[in-house]
Picture 1 (cartoon, rainbow, N blue to C red):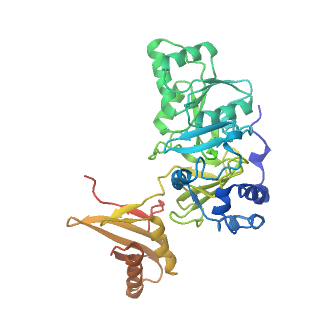
Picture 2 (cartoon, one colour):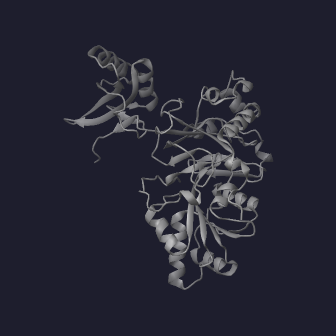
Picture 3 (cartoon, rainbow, N blue to C red):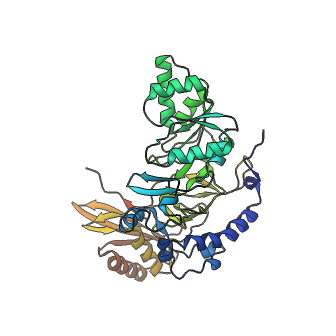
Length: 428
């Protein structure tokens, strides 16, 4: 049995980089035939975007902005290359945000993740993602089909009926959320139905704490996870070597990604980690916002800012796959908060840092004293003096329209957690 889905997974990282950025100019040129991308990337010469540095100069498209853009220019904000009537399916995710599905095989890049989770040609797979409007079930189903698996379209709900199908077809694999496979196994035990054929699972869409991974393993189901978004499909995925149940769990917003040893970036994606509120890439290891660029010919995404926080892990996976690894979901990048009735945005905090060359990294801490909102800008600098603090304070008030204090600190003293705004006011 081969260890890898294809040779792309183990190629030299420099060769991967050359290949991705050799393909990127044509992908951008195709994207710019769509009016939304033409407007968003106005003035960009696609041929010039042939390196990571050149890509970093392009504007971000924030996922949080898609809702309003699609309302202004339905159905897809003008970012679709393929007309709606020529798509395979037209989806609607919560928000609502609308996504087209094209005709490409494995359009969401899920086959690679399924292979890493142990799925093989000829397997029968039970898919418990929702088949109602949202694209998740279809992304995973397309990946399973590309791998040569048969799929039971279980969907959500009707647990006992799904168990009847499982007992009859005896699938070896499971696709769905980690909590629902537990529900299936618990209900099977209570109703004396046979779900013992399921030996492996590829999960996403909710938290997979170490305790749940261990429990499922003790019941005979080896579970790995992937991080996927509706606009690009599978962004990254675990391999067997990375699934370490003893890893400490972290908070999860139900969005998908966590792994003690990191998750491997898909071969279909260019991934960047940028400082929240900006499009500027951060150094490896520093927490920032996940930004993805895809090569989908029907619905390309160029520097889509997902709103999720993560960080690049050093080195390659112990499994031998050589693509970049990220730590997993580490919070949300949109930290906008209201101070004294005024919204303060991460982009404003980043602008303050940009205006003062001596600042390395900044963090706005919002607290409450004497029943009043207060804010203090903590700024890393190697040249702390009263004049600099006074100048930064003036910029803080000018940019945010709210007066705040400034505390200059030594470089490296602020937490590496991706927070640009830390709201520490008591709740309630």
